Image (tube, rainbow, N blue to C red; front, top):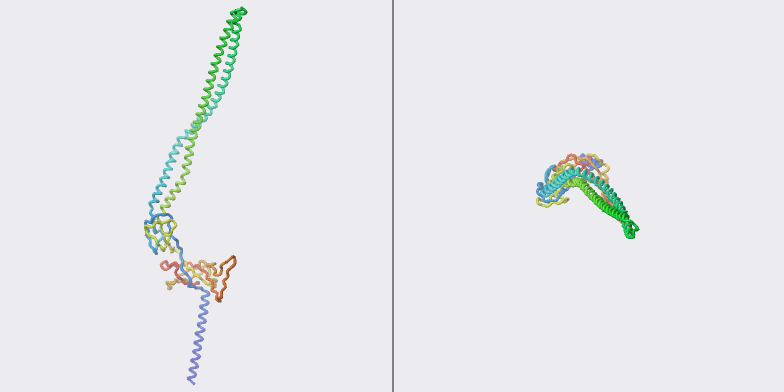
Length: 399
């Protein structure tokens, strides 16, 4: 009886232990489930950082390449040097062209200083020439009028001579017949001589007037030539000022060439823009660098992120600014802290393709529908650049 009681008690104790263990497991499972629900975690996470491809902005032979692949460089450290000789020559040529232009401007200003009086003199000469043209024109008009008067006087004297000559020829035959006296014939001869003298004087006056007209025309032509010469000198003097404007307008272009040559020379030396790791280097000294062709990559070590992919059912418990515990797969003993920086709002849907304008829904017999995962960007607060690597696997727990 005692043995049966002991066996019964042992069975009851065993049942109590079994039910206790089951109840504890259920409680633990509920606790873990609630904790996971409240603090989502995932091992589908990877380390990220900003990186840039280093490419030269000028072409040339690599003269120096002091960095090595996977080496850590500090901000300002020399990355590489392109042979600067061609760009030094270009800078000296640009500076020489600029200095040559300045000297030409100085010489032109000196010419302008000397030509300013020439401009005034030329302007005065143009004015005087214009006045001389008017005066010469008046002289020509006066000479023409004098010629006309002399011509009229010559015509009158010629007519008087003809009249006196005809009168003499009419009287002379009458002297033999004693129809006229000798005195009358002498008077007719005298009238002829006087008329001839007046006619000769009129012709001389006409010739003189014509000569004066020719001289007046020549003086007018001379005044016209002087006016043209004065205008040419004035235009030449003004042209010097125009040349200065053209030279001064070349200053910005040559200054830009100098700045460009100086910038290209500065681009021969490339330094690290920030603390970084060198990676993906596949080039050596002596290679020919080309603008825009990447030579290697710099990984920025100033900021590190972890991008964790959470199921859509867990995203509702994640908020921007929530603290996060981060563990690297390669160093699970180290705990890093971070903050949720952003939560993704879109991923490419597997059944979201469009065919001919209509959704293409694939027919499937799968009874289990996998939930989508959305990326959560976590900024690491205390990164260790010696341990963090882009693409490394991480485990994140949102608190």
